[in-house]
Amino acid sequence: MQLIPSLVIALVALWPAIGSALDHDNLDPNRPIGMEDAYAIPKGEIGMEGGVRFNDRREGRTRVTFQPQIIYGAFDNAQIELQGDLMTEPNTLVGANKSGDLHVGVLYNFNTETMNIPALAIRAEVDLPTGLNSRGVDSQLTGIMTRSFERLRVHLNVGYTVLGSPQGQERPGAYRAVAAVSYPLGYPTSFRDTLIANVYTRQSDLRGQRNNTGVEIGLRHQLTSRIVLDGGIGTEFLGPTDRAALLGTVGLSLGF
Image 1 (cartoon, helix red, strand yellow):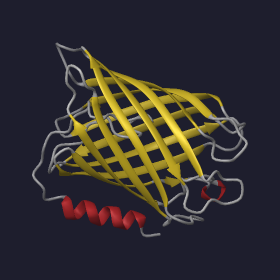
Image 2: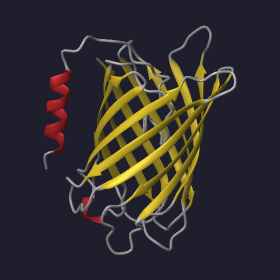
Image 3: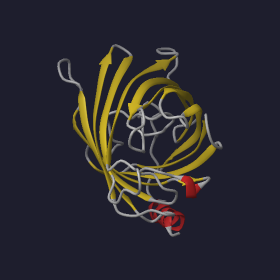
């Protein structure tokens, strides 16, 4: 498996870049819950993110996932992402996510929010079959909207994933929709924490099963200008018998 060495080499190559601040209010996928906002990191900025996510399923063993990620502000309003998920029980995984797959994504922001128009972005991703029992190249397209109401921000993510080589009862494609809100705690006397909550639904990995539907809540804390800590928790109240009874994430983001 060449995933982790590849991510490490990429990070080392980017390390000499000039340091810059990391914004805790810029929300990336799974940092700390399953949603993102419509804004890319600034051009030239580099972020290294890592998290540990657990899924205590109603049936089956608790699954733990390590999620290393590198984000690079390659252009104005555009970022490139490299990520790999390493999971426990890799032989039991179904659906698009396989342990050790390399995820390559691009997020492009079309506009900054105005009085009349929300911020809009699109995110495209390909998942290369570098992982265990992974076949075919999977692809994903997500539309993202962010709208502010004073300090409260509302987010909507709608995406569709296409499997390159579905196996057995796996769906050849599945949609996902997320509605979320984020709010800066302590404002205006301090601005170090952002509270995020969402409700989501996604098609199950296998045909003939109910949608996985749940809620999550998380917090991002600005420790220093270059370090952000995050944590989140959630549950799925509808879905297959092995849906999540309890979800949780603890993560760290570094800016360079």
